[in-house]
Image (cartoon, rainbow, N blue to C red):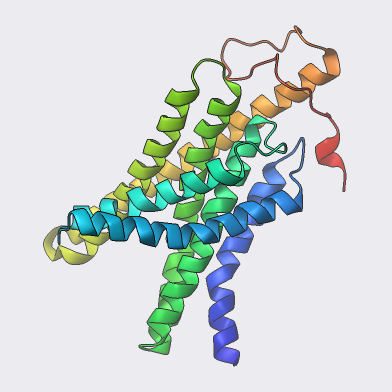
Length: 267
């Protein structure tokens, strides 16, 4: 019982940490727990949807290549599943009402997916040996769970632009989906190649670490940018439309809904 509890804690702790982190970054209008829970559970429900998509892909075409495994069995169907869940559960929700919300909800969906996936992988490895279970939990907690978080940041950034930027909705929707698919596919491809190609595996893994750091920098930049857009929305609300907060170097649309400037400070 103790071992099971420890494995479960190891599986879900990285998920909880990242959910708390992104929730705290939502500074101007906190999202309701009910809607966040809907996004998180939706991410869990993306697992069977992903399995269905993979089975359809395998029925049409299959391959033993690393590229096929990384993209056609992981990156593409998993991100498409999350995208479908976002559009079905969040896109028209009244609480998706500011730029930063796209990142919040997309990451909660991604972390819901990662939570179930992590439990499956950790307990699957533990069924072979206890050491493998704990080792898998540690590695996935450092790489895979944050990976799903970052894919959600990338997708959510563009989904917010699609929601609030006029005249560019389709382009931003496609950019969000394809960017997340590409990031996820390359992430898995590099890890797989590093593990199956001994001669160049070490070099590929170094490249992977560099790319992972770059992905973190991109994700944090997207977070900061949408935080700034939400701040400008709040300032526009405080000072009125058509104010000095119209700025040429931002994705902020000042004609968009007013936001309570002090909302993020309430407990």
